[in-house]
Image (cartoon, rainbow, N blue to C red; front, side, top):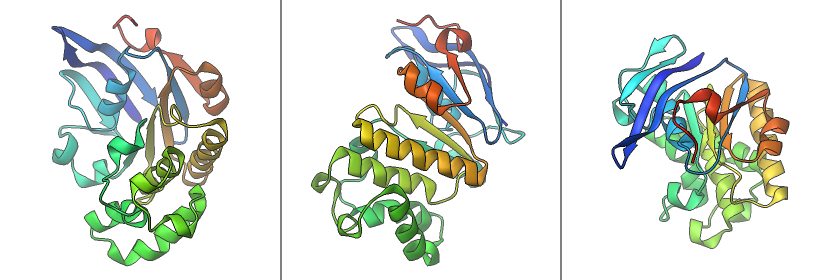
Length: 222
């Protein structure tokens, strides 16, 4: 179970971006968080992904109350969560070729022996041709780079996925393709999914249930 209770986080102009937020999802469940731009849902997603320390409240992951954030979180908790961000060019190292981008988490966790097989497997899964793997981010489209970023997220087989407006910059065809990859992974691995966005139709088609920002947090939407 991934549970956020009474979370307050992120201050702007003296006021919290997220105030008294509550959200829970079960293993294997897909939950969509629906809200307008600027309401604070991305901040809450970063808290859920252990990337942003809340100012108040608790996060519990697989029965363990989280005490550390970012690199201070235990490795087994950090690697249990995979995050796909809205803008792939801000989350990808521009110096890395796509094959190295995908392999980066394996190398960082000392699993270099898995690199070749996992990169080949996942590039095929997300629809990246072998000819693209030798290119750097500036040499591919946003959609191709987001495919590589999704492969990088899946390479460590996380138990939980957080998709923060993952498809906002993509065309309909690429959106459908990447959603299908996430859903296939979720069903095969029993992973839980939190995906945030403002497209009600997409979230309701994609997720087991969709919750509105007003039902999650006391912070009023803009």
